[in-house]
Length: 413
Ligand code: PLP
Image (cartoon, helix red, strand yellow):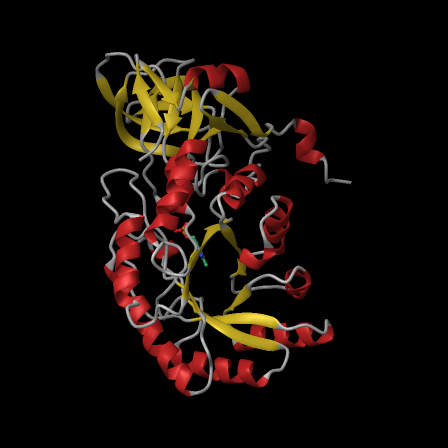
């Protein structure tokens, strides 16, 4: 459930009209609802309340420092995948003891930075990475807590680009390789194996794959125990899907219940979840304005001021985002492509969509864009990135100003 709704013939976010935000901050504009973010975070935290747990918001979904600060204030930890995300998290005041570091290609300087702040743990994805972490930790006279990321070979039944737990994916280690990695970790004085990790994919709409992966992890944790490796943390990653269109994904409470049932014998373990999309996705919209409409012999086009540089998901994954007018009027719907100004035919926000016959100047909302929206945006075609606003009740705060032309060349000598 989110706090974007149509009332009195207008789209509102909490107690603010989207039209007023478009007038005040310009378009394209990302708008986030604080109440929705809080609600979604708490849904996860409550779902796991019978278990020792830590909810680590996945920074890659939305790394705005203001949003991370909000998460931290609610007690969240974070899942990071780069030194840059560590920097953001620390700037936002996230407790390093609640930071887990995932990703297949951690660089030496990133490992050093994470060890310096004494993060909770590294989710290690290869034997070479483990050796490197061990070496750097020894040089720094410290100990690195690690989990090994297991690739459980479970089909998450989602888009191939965001499936990560299949044998053919680059992520994690299979159970046999992971056994070797744990024994190596145990034998390395500067490394302490404390957990076991997996993340099988994103936008999962069924519980089955989560439970299948969890069972494989638990069986593996038991085998490790008998080899003298004491597992205390069980990190199941992120991946819970959201409703973009007609999907009916399980709720965090459903996921929590399944985890609790499956973990009946291992209540000693601390469960970590790394949700991104399920917290931020439906907590944000992208507001854009119609520039032109154009009818060709083949199609009707609605050309808007947001483009694939602002929201790449439709172009990259063929993703569906609901689009609606900010001030709806009764009109006959027509079939249109909603496209941006970028010089690529892949620059679309929607294709073959039934929308009212729109006119230049009208403001539209592209829904479910709070996750992997701004964070995947770029300056392609030298388009300054959009501004971001967080709404709390009747207050709107600029969370990131719109980039300027000078920002485009600021780093070029
Ligand atoms: N954890 C890891 C390791 C990931 O790679 C991702 C996303 O790809 C996430 C968590 C967040 O996933 P989601 O946004 O689907 O919850």
